[in-house]
Structures are given as C-alpha cells and as structure tokens.
Image 1 (cartoon, rainbow over the protein chains, first blue to last red):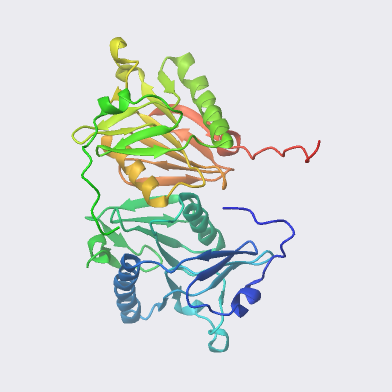
Image 2 (cartoon, rainbow over the protein chains, first blue to last red):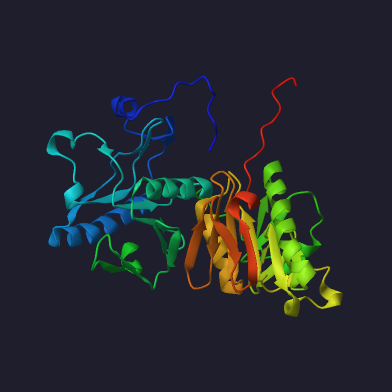
Length: 187
Length: 195
C-alpha cells in the first residue's frame, strides 16, 4: 500500500463514521489512514447475493446469529483500522446491543467473506485477511470469481483452497454448514 | 472497447524464447504474451536472499539446482511459460545438458514468487494454481510488506508463516528450515536525506 505523507493526521473510526456518504466510493480505515475503493462490478454483486442467501438461510434456520452485508468493523484502535467486508456473520452471543447497532461494530466478525475484484492487489488481500484473523475472526473466505475458487483462511495460518467441485464447510464457526462452491457462482 | 480485437495468433514457448531481450519480463499464458516490468529493487534483494538461503542447503548436499529467474514450460498447446523469481529442480529431474540453456520443459519442484505491490490477487492465484497443476510440489508466495510467506501445496492446502514462524522445505527439501524473519527481513532504514 502506498504511504501517505507523514504530516497527515490519522483518522479515527468516529471520523470515518462521520464522513458524508458520497454514494460512489467505499471507505475503509487502515492504521488511521483512509483507503478508498470503487463500488464493485456486477459479478461481485451477484456472488455476494448468492453467498448471502446460502449463509443467511442456514444462520436463520439454526438461530446462530446474524449475517450482514457490507458493514464496518473496528478491528483495531490506536491507530484505528475499520474494514467493511463484503459479507459477515456475527454469533448470537456477540451481536451488537440495539442502541449501538447503527454504528460500526466494535471488534471483529466471526466470519468474513471477501470477494476479489479484478483490480485488487494480492498484497492488500493478504494484509486484509491477516488483519481479520489477528482481530479475532475465526474464518475468512476469499472468493476468486475468475477462477471460481474460494480460499478458506483460519487462525494459526492454515488455509485451504476449494475449487468449483469442492464443498465449503463452516467448521466450528458455523457447524453443519456445507455448500457446494459451484452454488456460490451460480448465475 | 466494443469492437473485438483482431485475433492474435497464439505463441509457442519457442516463439517466446526467440524474442529479443529488452529488459522486460515476458511470460506466456495459454499462448498469450504477458509482459511485466522488471521488479523493484527490494524485490530483487529478497530474491537474492532466498536464493542464497536455498542454495546454501541444496548445493552442499547435491540435492539439485537452485535457479534465479528462468523459463519453465508448464503446459503445451496452448503453451504456458512462467518465470518464477526463484526455483529449485531436484537432482533427478535436471534437464539434459544440451537443453539446459533453453526453457525447462516441465515444472520446477519448488517455486518462490515474491509479490510486488502492483500484483493482482486474481492473477497471483491463477499463477500458483498453474504451478501446482503442472507438478510443482511446493510454492512459496512471499509478501514482503507483511513479512509473510504462504506455502501452497498441490492438495489445495496452504500454510501462512508470519515473521516469527519457521518455514520448512517439506518433502521437497527435507530438513530445510529457516525463520521467515531471516528470509524476509525488514527493509533497513535509509540514511536521512542529505546525509
């Protein structure tokens, strides 16, 4: 990632929250510095919905917690890191209190899904995944649309690549969840 | 954008080999030329460091040859030729003497790719999958900025090694072990401007 000029003041999660929504860009905060990205393309959006339906149905059925579309998570404080994964799951006993649920979540989701866009840099994806795991996320699924592959990252550095004929499992985060990778990419 | 580009003929490994050297890096993916700029300075320094570490283990034991950037023909028809940053070929798979000056026909046993800031995530995933599909038993992907090495294996598993972890050679280089911190050091501070 490019380094900003040293004189630039670091932003906090609250500064980020207060930024006016320009309806076009996605803003995240990495170590107090603003990271701006374009809205994703259609493929990305379609996969997000497929995934959300698979996860959402399972989570609701088993009353495990809640699945969220893009939402801000304060992964670290001082300097602040706020990430907005494409999809997340938060366990029932960790759901935000109703009075703060309109703000960013203070902490990491239990499960994060990131869908790779053609312009995403490899180093940035690796850093993002490492950031979730360090903050306490127990399972990160990185989706590579062009290769129709999902890579599952777990704490402790174990990673597994699932091809189109593979089956994703929820491990200890979503016990019993199993979905053919192909369903994620169904058009 | 809307007019389809004229159909370019697919290139072969031999076409690629015959391209005059102009300091760019050329690879072939399914018969199509992929051009990249020479890597940055620190990338080059890390490649050297990894080469030295591997060679210090491999050469005294006669295990094979550690190679800097060189072409491997991973697939034919259409041809895919990749030039990993560092690679290792086992002693029993060395190329015939008369062919060693050309691209290697097949995959290296170990491949090391050092990620540059501009590398796309999707392209890297495709590259790693290509090596593994062609027979490479171990691919190390080095992320200099977060000082992490991810070891990918053909069964689809991968292991992330942070700077405090020890990277091992697995079945490809049994007994080889090095700390990531040693292999991927922090970039030393530059002297202050004007010094």
